[in-house]
Image 1: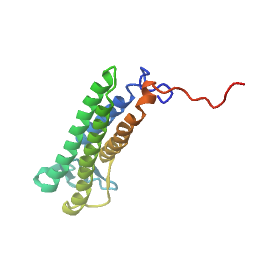
Image 2: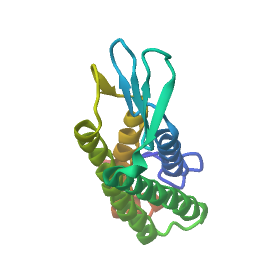
Image 3: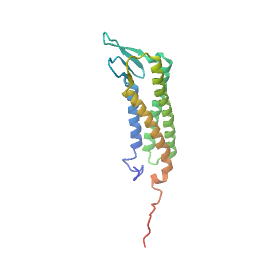
Image 4: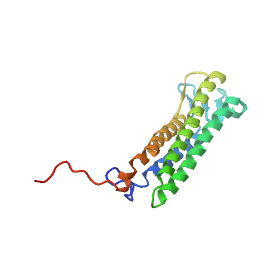
Length: 189
């Protein structure tokens, strides 16, 4: 990608592809039931962004309680969901920006700024959830924040990294478009 620039046909779609992967990770985090799980026996607790479930030790059936009854549960879900919606909007805008033959570099910088805003909302939800969950919900045994919560953090980290890349890309507009003459370090005799 560096050698050929963004005009190189196959490399042009790397950024929208990475945003698409971030969207997929965000869907997994939103839909996954593995935000919190019991780490040791007895496995009696699991939670998602939307609900907390306990297993009854006598019947081994799960009873679930919605986290939307708590103000912090609604706040964590809303902020993470806003961050995810902004990520989806950035994905759509990146598809549009890179589909146009002449790249609009100010448009790309705007996508980067929107990705930073999405990262702020996602991180707010990812911080509110464990802090308030561990203080408000009674937990037994050793519990761990699990795979779906990890996908949420992966999405937030991707938003930050891609935000930097989208913001810095217009600084190299001439190199990307091939408007810079090559520099030679030797002269012929």
